[in-house]
Amino acid sequence: AQSVTQLGSHVSVSEGALVLLRCNYSSSVPPYLFWYVQYPNQGLQLLLKYTSAATLVKGINGFEAEFKKSETSFHLTKPSAHMSDAAEYFCAVSEGNTPLVFGKGTRLSVIA
Amino acid sequence: SAVISQKPSRDICQRGTSLTIQCQVDSQVTMMFWYRQQPGQSLTLIATANQGSEATYESGFVIDKFPISRPNLTFSTLTVSNMSPEDSSIYLCSLGGQGGTGAFFGQGTRLTVV
Image (cartoon, rainbow over all chains, first blue to last red; front, side, top):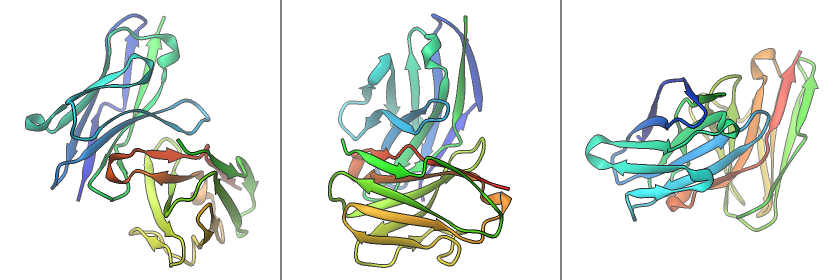
């Protein structure tokens, strides 16, 4: 069965600094991988997804993620953090037609 | 992308009562999913709801506690029965997510049981 591990329940960065949120997955088949963002008191919004095409995936709001099969990782990055990026971020994995399985989430704080 | 309308957006309920959450989609979909997000936690899949068949529940969730209806391809309900404070969570309906499409979520129902 697939699973996701997000390293770090809370990450704090300064405004303008690099954002790196870590995600490692476990899957018995080539996975589909996703990053979602959840702002306070809101639903989930899809940031980006990997579906076996390009290993470097660009998403909304300047975020990108790189699929590394050898490391079973799908880390999320953004070159320069903005105050509006403060939110909860969830990595998720799916195998074929199975529902998404989510990681525990990482809360990103951005310090002015 | 599909538009998902979920009602109510929030509610405060007395223990022992039941609450039915509605999820309306603007297009026909075969599979819909119900997730629970407990305070400060991630999303956990409750069940998969297919139109015309019984919902499929994940381990730890039972039909008596979380009955689900799926009367047509655009609508589903989740009932949280005989509620206790431990049921206080955000409940989200979702569609898609298979085959790499990426799941879409409703805004969620924030339930507080007192």
